[in-house]
Amino acid sequence: DTAVSQTPKYLVTQMGNDKSIKCEQNLGHDTMYWYKQDSKKFLKIMFSYNNKELIINETVPNRFSPKSPDKAHLNLHINSLELGDSAVYFCASSQYGTENTGELFFGEGSRLTVL
Amino acid sequence: GQNIDQPTEMTATEGAIVQINCTYQTSGFNGLFWYQQHAGEAPTFLSYNVLDGLEEKGRFSSFLSRSKGYSYLLLKELQMKDSASYLCAVIDSNYQLIWGAGTKLIIKP
Image (cartoon, rainbow over all chains, first blue to last red; front, side, top):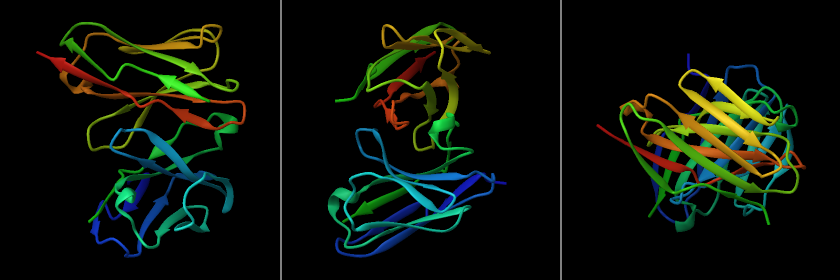
């Protein structure tokens, strides 16, 4: 059983399109995250949800909108895709938020390429 | 600003020992993680340090000095499968996780 699974793993699309990435965790964790890893390999937090409540919203464009229907799912919708959005997007979960120093469990990543 | 510094790339020989350093300047400190990331894969947890000293876990050990803003990851008896990027991440005073860019470790036979 995959602990944190995200789909799709690869996504190639044109500029201006809208796309979604889905994430599910079966670990019973309270907190889920979306990270962006660019070509320089920096991991940048985008969003964090704790039990369906948004607790971090970094300065990402409002074209990115997270949605959490329940605490096991955190989806990412991106409107009007731009070339700079090309990156690998990782979903992650932790038992607690980092306040309790819980380790992060990452999904396999979704590689988005915008042409 | 907040900053985490790691060497970009290191090379070591199979069977040897390698030490990957991480220095940090953050607004407060609430712990430091090391993660391993193989190319094209997700990061996986290696270690967590919050108190000064050495934490040993099999072939891997992690050291922390809070007064120096310094940590290292020590890998012993290197194997080819240890070729990966090693990411240092610090929890700051706001409980935000700040990531380094990672150190790409290349193991040669």
